[in-house]
Image (cartoon, rainbow, N blue to C red; front, side):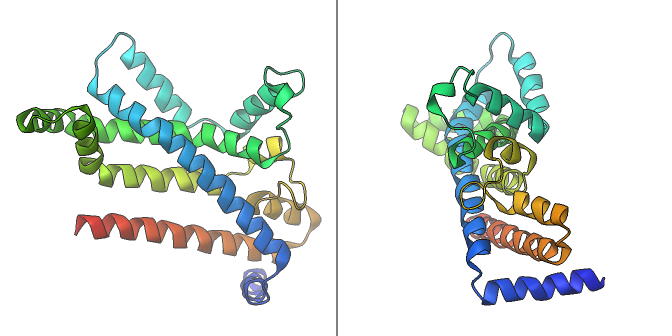
Length: 231
């Protein structure tokens, strides 16, 4: 308990003193996770709505694959991205390993199945009702798509919150493809792991508490938007 108390005091000191190293790590963490969330959402939301509204051969198999990937071990996702981006890999010419871009790709790979699965579940519950309403109103494809997004906004917000939580708390994948390079690819989770390995437990606890507070703040804002729209 004494260690946790010291960690809380250290966290307040790091924030109040505007510690450059910590703020740099926090900034990169947010950039990587929010970028991955945006990229995953741009692909998962329309794909999830389409899958939910169509019947095709192999759909049940596809759903099992998606649900399996929702629980993919982060280290496996990081390893796959690393192999693809390594010099001898198919995209090695891009030289993206050990860069924030590789970290964004790895987090996108982990977040996308979560957003996709949750979007499909939300859309399947209302797909028939929304489609019938769209036909009644004589809506075109664009209007129907917008109607889907409006009616699914609560489920989509839940998916976004889940996806962001997955990304911001991830350590294994970003460690593999990013390497935890100071001033370049170090994010909060890899920084905590490094501090623990160095025996600097007070600062590790402090950074961990900052990460927890940051996640709580962003999830609170997203949840507030969700409740505000519902009200």
